[in-house]
Length: 327
Length: 238
Image (cartoon, rainbow over all chains, first blue to last red; front, side):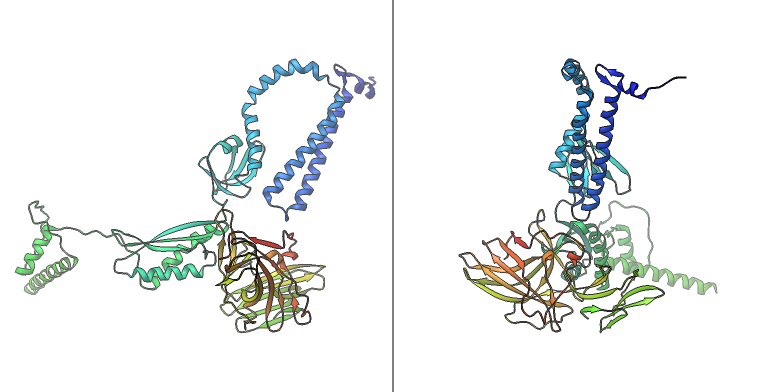
């Protein structure tokens, strides 16, 4: 039978002058510090959730957590009675090794601290970091956590966040967006602008100031291009942007203004000659043979239509004549 | 419409129908408008419950994006070191608030007025405001107390120059709204400190207590801390 004297084990030496009891005490103090830190931060977050912004709450919570852990460590260390001076040489060598190995970790750590205090991004912001478009969910000591619009988890090391370009889409209070609305040349651009202005006036989140800007931007190939620029609060920018374009389309179409289809003027030199002949001789035939030397004059839609009408009229006349003859 | 209401409660006018009644063991609140919009909410409570219908801080609809109210008015010029009280109108949002177990909660917020927002200051650093246009009145104007209230604004030019004033920005957190049988009222003060900076603050009413009844302050009921009673207009008032 083995008699285990627990006091004896605790008094036995772990290394140097440090006993197992002192090591246990060290870890016990650390565990208690972690429990206290967790308890305090959880209650702090619960208590301040409605009163402090998520970003500031996260920062305060982390500071409190790590401060308590640090205090716990400072209380626990004397129990080890470590002769730190003896470790200086070994520590120096070890420090160099760890320094090389943990270079990126330290770099991320320092970047994280700078990010927390500079806060170019906040939790909940819609940002573009290193070509990754995310909504920021947490800014940790070593990395920034986000979620793409597809719901995919993204972790970006803080060093990259700190050194790369950041586009923050919601950092400013308001944001501008624009549409190109194209109408036919036959439609009234002033009337279209008035309709769009009325719509913007009715939409609560299209801001009164800065004023919206609506103007004829281009005389494009298919129609008149109207540029519509307006501002909305960053918070609801996307909702307004996705709804207004359709409202504009519906409103201008209700007033008989149409969005043009692509248009091209086609040149049919042979067709033109033949239709001209058909008009003159009351006889028509369309050749598919290309004649490069033919007169390449553009023909108007009216001319084409009259040519087609006379052509079909002649054909129908001759067909009906044939049919009558056959009967 | 305004005031404390016992349940069952029913109100109807040309544009809106409100009802709160017990249905199958639940308390049902219902709002219907003449445009065909219907809003319903079920309230679960075992205690004595009352409803309060009153004008609330007009910065909630159609969605809360700010707590500032901006009233723009025809430009006026005020003499150096002079002060004058003017009357403006402001938009009204009506809150239906349920009381029970020593707490309160807004059940419904609606408005008879069109909504519009604006930006005061630059896009980076400025504030979004609920925007309203008002004429200037020397005496109390006649208003529809369900749609527009009357702001009694005392403008004090503390500078040594003539100043142009055409807007006032008010902080919704410190807003104090009163109502009577005739009108909905607010009282505020605007101090022009320099040619670009002004301070605005709401004032409590000490007189006419028998006529004017104070509205429930919604943001206080939501336990949002009062940051400051004075709003500094640092991007001008012209």
